[in-house]
Length: 117
Image 1 (cartoon, helix red, strand yellow):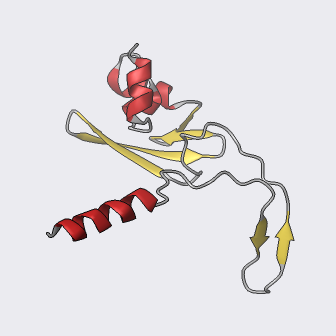
Image 2 (cartoon, helix red, strand yellow):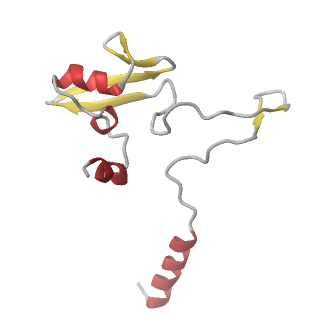
């Protein structure tokens, strides 16, 4: 790759607006499907920002066995039982205490590093 192309690639990369999570809603308009009308309301952020939306399925292998958890409005479903936290499921699966976010890979590298201090 030429030096000019390399420099242009660096410029593009520096200008890129990369996001890991979508921006938090404030006072946004919500489009209703089909009728073209728009409803304006304040959306309150709920719960921990590390948690995926309800309905999301989390899968993690533990000792060769897939552990499948469904995120619900009122907790987490694992093997047809509702748990209040991911940590409770991790403890059920492993028999030891775990941070549920860490066990299911829902933490960033910075959060893992800070937790180890």
